[in-house]
Amino acid sequence: MNKINASRREFLRISSLLSASSAIGIAGAPFALNLATMASAAAQTIPNDYKALICLFMFGANDHANTVLATDSASWSQYLSVRTTNESGSIALPGPGMNQGVLPITPSSNQPGRSFALHPNMTEIKGLFDLGRVAILSNVGPLLVPTTLTQYKAASVPLPSKLFSHNDQQSLWQAYAPEGAAYGWGGRMGDMMAANNANPIFTAISASGNAVFLAGRQVNQYQVSASGAVPISGLSGSLFGSSASANPLKSIITSDNFNLFHKEQAAITSRAINAQSLLSPAMAPAGATGVPNPSQYTNPNTGTLGNNPLAIQLQTVARIIAGRSALGVQRQVFFVSMGGFDTHDFQRKTQADLLAKISHAIAYFDTAMGNLQGSDLRKQVTLFTASDFGRTFTSNGDGTDHGWGSHHFIVGGAVKGGDIYGEFPVTGLKHNQDVGSGSLLPQFSVDQYGATLANWFGLSANQINDIFPNIRNFSARNLGFMT
View 1 (cartoon, rainbow, N blue to C red):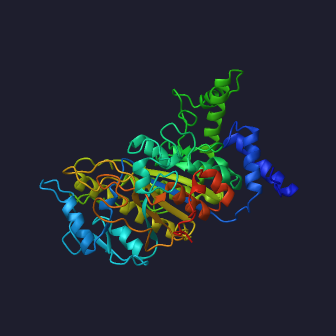
View 2 (cartoon, rainbow, N blue to C red):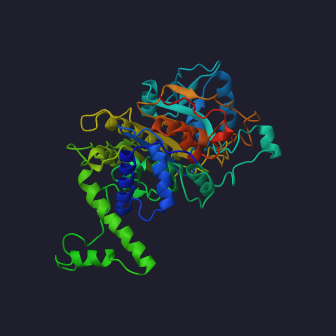
View 3 (cartoon, rainbow, N blue to C red):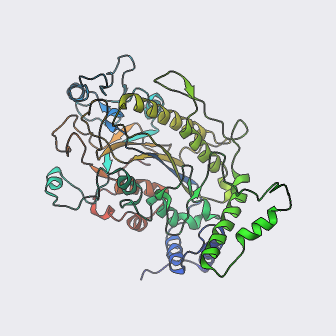
């Protein structure tokens, strides 16, 4: 058994946090799990800074091959030959320099003979890439062990379960296992870091509904709406025409009971009431006096202005981060998302609008973090993208089908940006990463992606081993895209 080197004062400090957490943050956690958290916290240096990690999940599987493209002569020729069809629904994009053409980028690490570009509607992301605040991780996806194409075809190594299935791969990306997984790696990071927060309930926060990514063994994810903490109706103001009804209602819904189900429901309700009373006044207001409202984005298909729901989610995240001192938090994990990326049909038009929203929202969030109530938090806040899987390189006429590996963005001041990490895949078909129809065999695992972020977040090597069970199988535990 490992010895815990902690002073009596540190033991009491962590014990008091765990005790307090049962009131509003980690109610009912078994004593053994609390001891595990205490040991984990005591074994590491307690950070005195603030860091936040935001997962932006693109539900439906974003087509990576029209998001980040190789544009050198040989690659572009292959791209056009495969993605240009004889139908009006061709998914090939215009080339660099053409009207509405792809946007050239120059990675700081040269890949001989290759040149690259972004989707035409990712103007803001290109700007952040050029400024060194966006990195691209090439061809990442679920893997259990390093896998070659020969091994994949022979099934001679263990492979992730239920490849190409939306629900299962969403779960694998967020929580190591197919649909039905109980714990996500964002929530497990929260487990490890909750002792650093005076109010552990605000460790893992979703602005996009329930997410297995934020499910911890001890930490409960806290869900917020665009207006912030969600109150229970009737506990303030008038109820059934009576201002005196709120207290009796609160007593009824929070009263203790011998029935275990009733008892747990009352505990959850009490926790929600307490949390809402803490979060609402701590959040910065939306607007000129707090976190500025996002501008409207331009729909590239119609040219009209509209609200961007993803930017509003990120504004909610920024408002909570602005209240970090009042909430007594030093580490937070957030989840935001967009749907609509399952582009079997109408891909070129649909993805153009989706990526315009992604680019606009990320740029808005970067600006908000650059001056959050007078402070530049960009080095302390990192956003990363994830999705079900990539898509096939081949077109079905006006769309693409389910794939595997995909390219993703990491954004923030602590990111070693302006570069593409990993060898960018060969463009075309029948190469050593093509598992069929141009679907990519990943070169990096989600475990490696997450472990690199976890290392920046402040987790130890042992904690990373605990959170990412397959990381031991890979020689590169840190992919180098974070400072």
